[in-house]
Amino acid sequence: MAFPGRNSYSLASEEETNMTTLKRRKVGKTKLEVTELGLGGAPMGGFRATISDAEAVKLTDDGYDAGIRYFDTSPYYGYGRSELRMGAALREKPRDSYVLSTKIGRVLHAMKPGEKPPADFRENGLPGFAPVYDYTYDGVMRSLEHSHMRLGLQKIDIALIHDVDFWTTKDRAVLEERFKTVMDSGYRALDELRRAGIIGAIGVGINESDTSTRFIKAGDFDCMLLAGRYTLLEQGALEEFLPECTKRHVSVILGGPYNSGILTGNVKAGATHDYVAAPAALIEKAQKIEAVCQRHGVPLGAAAMQFPLFHPALCAVIPGALSTAEVKQNVGHMSVKIPVELWSELKREKLLDPAAPTPN
Image (cartoon, rainbow, N blue to C red; front, side):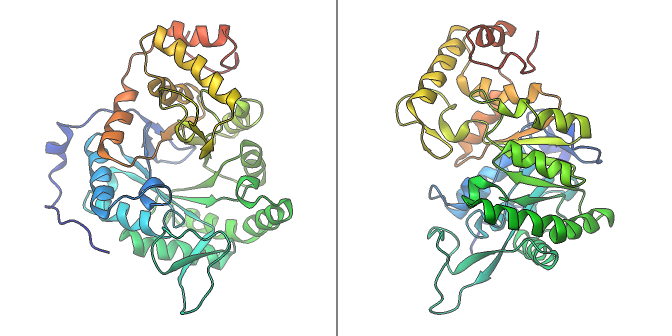
């Protein structure tokens, strides 16, 4: 895979003069600190849109130049393509200047001639590679070794158990099998790597708050990457998941703060939620939320980005991006001044859970 040539990375003192200052938060009880805004690497994998190597590397570079210091990827995103692209940009930068997370659960292999791909195979991943689920001790070790090679980086800061949830499996029996395998076997590998100081933190990256809570109670985790379940549209995570995280000092990284598109703004029929067309009830609710934001002169996307971070368990939100313009927009949303009355009005209109932490 060819990547665009770039000059050597400039001195940190020069770079600091042009970047946005993003606040940092600790990850659980670890020594790691991440910027409140991170960059999610799923879109640059190419599953839902076509993006070139050069564009992917540039938007990662531009995110770094804008002040982002937390980057998340996975072997699953484009079957290795996201790790290759993100690594191509990040290995040009001082390694101790940013935090990187990737995931375990799928081991990639080069497909043999005539080999049939898995039923859920996506054609627009890295050509010639297919994933195999493997949550065993050996599978975790193999997956991380492969990730190091694709990234071209010696250190991975955070390793996350990926997609052990019903949202992915659509089968309770399969979910139970994978949960048992990873907690009986794969978790041991992650814990050993953490104890040895090879990995700074371990956690879980899934789409369900109830399954995340189950993981928290089953092991000693530093963080949870929860996709889309604590946003302006839905706050079910307040019931048990977030209190449990606070109680156990487990940090939450929120993926999908825009709920895959519906909260980016200009809400209309056909807007996506969880990567499919949103039902009419959600469209109506999002439009009402946007109307409140407009009355206060605030972009819906800015409110969506900042809201989750009011909860003390949160350490970062990590929207993905398909272009430099989207990266810059995400960074800009973090600095928008939002009046306290906006949050009060959302609660009065029963558009936001009254228990959700917001400024007074």
